[in-house]
Length: 304
Image 1 (tube, helix red, strand yellow):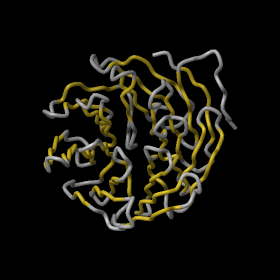
Image 2 (cartoon, one colour):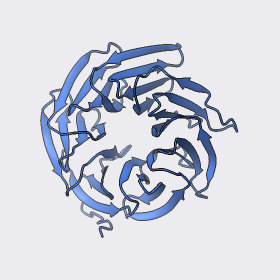
Image 3 (cartoon, helix red, strand yellow):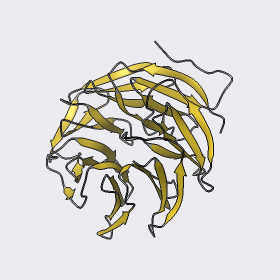
Image 4 (cartoon, helix red, strand yellow):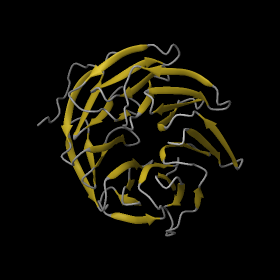
């Protein structure tokens, strides 16, 4: 895959804990250790808005399906629902007993789903004034590190080494045990497989229906970092960050390493592929790097 570094943004918000595209990829969000979320134009490096209201490091955020709202979670145990335009919190939701690690919207952005170090997954109806979670899943034995939310399923990865799939229509729970602490999960676009990044520097491809292990990807290093991965290029390629200041790409079917994207010093721990294009944004230390296919005009971003 022909990817080149297009530029970088110094986010100036302490360590960047996560980077996320909005629904159409026109903007991106960065979550900072300075307790703030920032909204950027990733093509120009322009800072559009800063959202301040958390009392702890912001660990994750997600944009709504109409890009009008943001939901964010923090080490302060709270979930905040923001109005993008005004920059003000619409609702603060408290119910978790520990730091909240991850958050996702459902398809129509009426429900926010959060996962916490208190081992629970909580569902919040953010369109009403109800401040309590409408559903709480307590089956995990350790921290919830990552979530996938589809039309009728909630899939949770946990440090207890299991992937739990809650089928909301059927009212069923399926648990696939990997046996190694899981730091990040993503689903292939066809919904057939789950990719699980594990703390033993191995990414595992698991069949969604059978739980069968289909492939393993090795070569990157995680150490004790929660390093994210993704499926790109029409479910043909796996990409992951690494503690060795690079991102690694593998062939999904064969499992062989294709390429390394070498970056400046820093653990590459969070990444987000563009929803429709080829660009990928990576977070390391206080910097976000933008990579993509070379074009005639590569717009260099702010780098100081």
